[in-house]
Image (cartoon, rainbow, N blue to C red; front, top):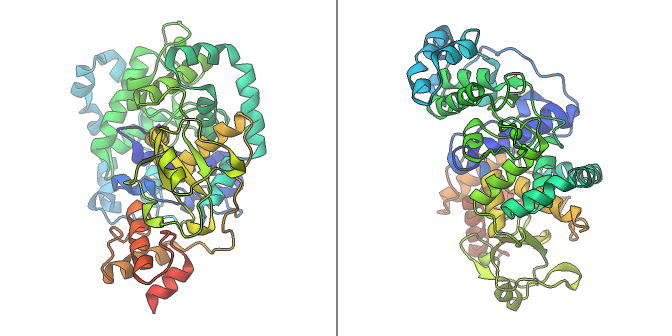
Length: 455
Ligand code: CA
């Protein structure tokens, strides 16, 4: 789980789950999502996930090459030097562990046989080609099987959900949707020992300070006995359990709901469900409200208002001609939200309420957060997203997206550092450019826009 300290890793972790396990055919390792170095990059419209193509099994060994980030700590020579120093680096973390109440005996027990997992260095610095569209992620994450399996989980754990809803005010459908999107109900989670992964990242590579806290938190979990070492396995970035807690998130949010004295978010469904609810509650979940709505945008609408900075009440949006499909009403007209139009005026719009922002703390990629919200609606009997997506639109490659950002910049529209990831800032720059040449300013970066910029 991502939340306040780890949001940039969330999309990477979800992608890992999808790639590594949920859809083995997708497991093309050079497409596995990297954790991204700039905090908000993970909010790009298109979270990094592999294309639908057969692929060989991922290699288990480090390539031995320089990381593609070009960071000095990711040079092969620097990685080798840090790996040679791994044992003493880990040993040197004892004083920090002791401050957290980890005893010498525990520290020695859990660290004495640790070796670095250098394969992670390739994953940290992977430069995936993002070749999937927003709608492709939704198709993968929300499908009939996942809806059906979720309904079975809701029935099976009804008694627990009754108690958790009462205790935390977070509805069962959203918890189940997180469970489904993050790990396909615990069936996919990665098998890397969390302590080894976080120790590797704490001592080697460009994210050491961040992962030192994760490593020390993982040690605390083991020392306290909340989760046993053989259970503490997960993604290469250290997320574990069916709802993918990072160790630091575990520390903040995990609860012992079944009363056995351990906060076991891996094998106790009561602890896992309640801890996930507690996470959302602490992140500001509004009880009784939903995440958002699919909406129809009228012809001639001013798309410059489709931006996070434009918060309006549902009633105000309605007065601008925004409607829900099928003539449905907005049950709470005073709720405020912003308009997200991920595929421009050719695709559906979404009004995003406060709870969508809470989901974005859980998983900072818009497509993933929307998948969680939409899946929760499906559990309530809702149907598929009603308006079509512009599936005919070719998806820009990473190089093309970078070029688009560079061209925008050269024309005076700042869409952020040209990284090839298109987030809200790039969308705003595309909108401004479209407006300047008399096109509908919907912010959707298409091949047509790129061709126009190249002229
Ligand atoms: Ca427990």
